Length: 290
Length: 309
Image (cartoon, rainbow over all chains, first blue to last red; front, side, top):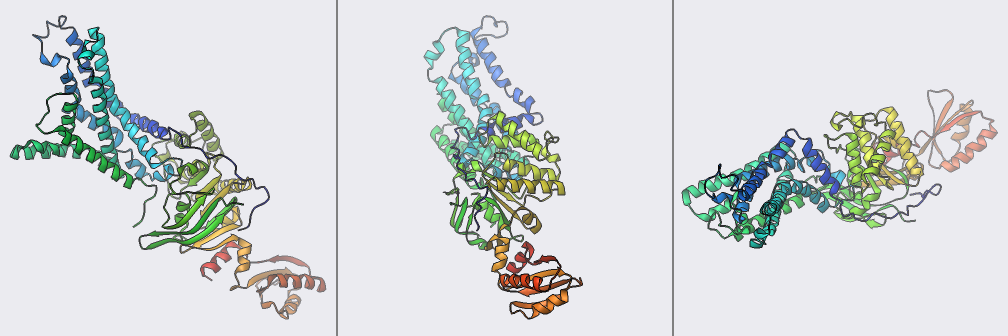
């Protein structure tokens, strides 16, 4: 080809290096779009009700004399021990709230990019596949940690404030770490679970059905088999029970079923590995025609 | 001088289907038209040079570096895909600022840049409307905006004028030429020849997954020996001129057109012919109105090379 000579100025700029937060704009947009969804704000604030109730429980436990007219004796559920934290983090309603949060926030995260063929725009920018996934995961992480880690720490903090001493922390110094560990397990699992399903379809409604359906179906299947065989290892079939088993173990409390909790953790890790493998395969800038 | 884009024996197969075969090409700064009929392999070529597809064979270098798995290079590349790729629930302005932030622009810089480019592409008034309500032309302009907003050195535009009205088309063509004059590299794909011709004389002609020709349109035409050049002369004494030309060795054919003041000749030796024509004009004292080459244009080159004529 001929070479332009007149008016040619060779490019001598510096290529930009990878920014630490290359994925952050994706996260910010994901959060913003979630709040634009109909009824999401209502759901979002309602999702903190269990946390508020448990927080009130901590207050009442420290002011038993003031509430004597309402409560007879010293009810076991108002004794603030790791079991109280287990009750919050592993109760079925709380886990169901997290699933609903994933449906609201996560069903369209990748599905919409597939629908609008937006991946080619992302990957025509200085953004790696891992940045893309981190950006999406951080969106889900933001909401999941708001419902798990933050209330967990607030419970610990307020217990100390209401008690006016550090006796609680001296008795259970590992508890804040257990809150962090279990919140991270919940966040990682639900984020990968949601993103994997979101990458399998370009229709966010189908994805929402899958998020809800698979979680529920695994529990129903467990119920059916357990009714007939009464074998505790069948608990491994249920996503919910696996999460509860790990939670109970981390808070040092009695397991829901007599199955080593390591099996549940291993199963969750394997599912996350499978999810990441699917994501790696599905996230590509252009559809390859076979 | 190092090329901005260089491919070496580049091939891409989709299973048994050939997308691109053994393409070696160098692209230097300026505007380059990537031409070819639908299904010729233009989009495959563009996706390979933007690192969106992995080559089956061969290599692609952009700014001297391998493009595959090298996202940092995209800081200086702007890509406008052929298909729409928008978040329909965002406004045009939100979309553009967000795209700029993915290029590591700060929120302030992104807003400033977005306003500037939306104004330039006549989208300022509609910038707060949701993209889902945009017309086809507006979507196309927004797609171009996201490709050029971060001021890249290499701009790759896949069918950028689709859906634009004549005014928008003219404006975009003018802008593309300006970017080329500034020393940037602009690769524009199209199957509409006049569009490319309006932007550049440098082309890469692609057909059936292969590069048929690359370079200046006129230079390529020179190289096509299988088709003699047609030259049309309009003057006051066409029959005297025809009589003189018919004796010339380099002239293969002389014929008249419905226009009584026009004669056309066919020759394989254009330079020899023009030397002779100059002398004849003086000898016969001709009053020449026009000398043109009807087949020295992109359409003719294209048709000859892909064998349609």
